[in-house]
Image (cartoon, rainbow, N blue to C red; front, side):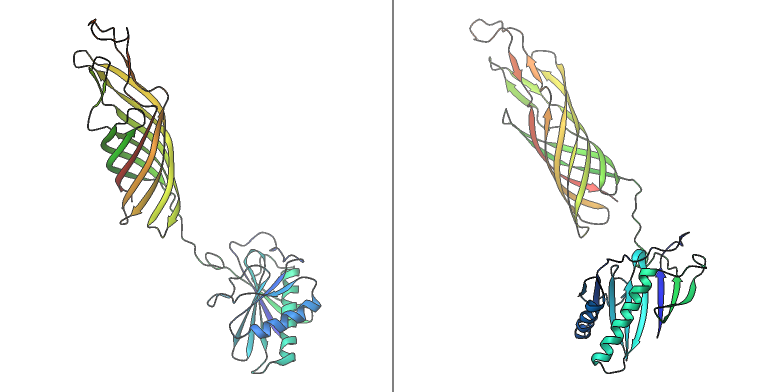
Length: 344
């Protein structure tokens, strides 16, 4: 009986390929219709080997070589049992056992001996001598003639793998942001725009939003302090959850800054600025190859919310402190945004 040992790997190494570990368990992977034969072979091998021998699921129908190391794929081709033993680093050892149309104890013993010889070849590895320059050698192992063949296939045993595009891609988004003041209980509504750069599912974006309506906070004398800030943020986002390249879920973290003019109707305005942290989670739906609809929920936490310090009130009939401090901004602001993204 002639057995062929084929090695699929790329590229050719400067030393001999590694060998199968002596304590590697043996798993038989019979094709449909060979389960009973595989069970009898496993019982026979268990008496002859010092490692566990088990029977597993059928091998891939179109590529029996695609089994883990130490697994033996079994298939029937007319009156021949085809055996494929996977070794380390994509080494594959083949053997054909002619048993005709029959079976019985003789077929079980023949298949068991062939699997044992294949495993011995995998334990010893390809023969020394012309390796690694040779691509084919014939040698004797355990009284059997074994032919070792090296075939270099592009992409290795499992073929070409899709290349990951790691080039950075720009993207743009625009939409509406709605927020809620946690201390003054005011609603916020306005547009949001952003421009970013993505590397895979990791993106860095600069964004800005501004409320449509001016926020008004009344002082002790009833005068309203007006404030409408512009918010600028820089966020790093990551979307680790991907469902069929259609739905994405992820989170983001970054910094944000607010600035705006505090004013009373009768006084000149004063500039107020603040910095803080912005974080959020998002759910995105890819509508087309370059268009997404995303819902982004998050919050801003600021270090020193804007306050308006008023001078003493000049009217004695109004009970006000000598210098009133009016809070016009919150420490924490919760927000949500519904945006359309142009993302190639």
